[in-house]
Amino acid sequence: MKIKFCPNLKKSICILFLVLSVPNLQAQDKSNTYDESQMKAYSILWQQTAAEYRALCYQAFNLASVRLKEIPRRQFRKGNLAIITDLDETILDNSYVGAQLIKEHKQMNGAEWDRWTAVSKATEVPGAVAFLKEASKKGITIFYVSNRDTASVENTLIDLKRLELPNADAAHCLFKTDTSSKEIRRKKIEENYKIVMLMGDNLTDFSTAFEKNSIQDRFDKTDLDQKKWGDKFIVLPNCNYGEWENALYNYERKSDDEKVKMRMELLKGF
Ligand SMILES: [Mg+2]
Image (cartoon, rainbow, N blue to C red):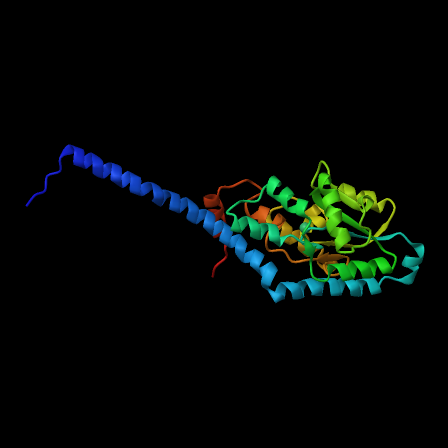
């Protein structure tokens, strides 16, 4: 038997199909967002729950402590020794803001970052406080060279003071003004101090050579400085964000779909 549809019924079926399709499209969009946020959740959970992360941080600061002990006495006699350290994911653990944004289904932006720094709830990266206190006790001055906005110095100092970090005052916080490059700020400190160590989770915390480079260039320049890692340069782990992530997308703003495509192209299988 052949079923005949009246024109109105056909129209109704089409409308019904469209209505049913819309939630599916929405679900597809949501699943992409979900994938991106779950990717971030994984790296944040590594920072918050992996004892291996904790051990790597201790390892970095233990090594830094060994290097301090190797500094000749005559250098201390001359005075004006300084350590330049980054703050975020080097001294301060900010994983909480990433975690909160995932829970709230939001993406990171300037306003969300400000919301986080305003509450001054950052904790220390494991081992950071003890190491900086040890360095300060030896007479070394600590400079916090961070790409936090200068407007957030006051809120940041609440964290630094609560953690009882040395040199926790505005004069030792060189935050971002007009450029994210830290070179000018490093040079400024070098006018009056001998820099014995640099600490960071991002290779731009150490040298301009790593600014906005391709993945291969970053590798090549890391190889050139091979002897400095674990010596004058102390690196902290951060698989959550950083210049390495920007390099994946050629420092360009990409949609979630484009990011997925680029990541797939970069993955090296066998
Ligand atoms: Mg950092």
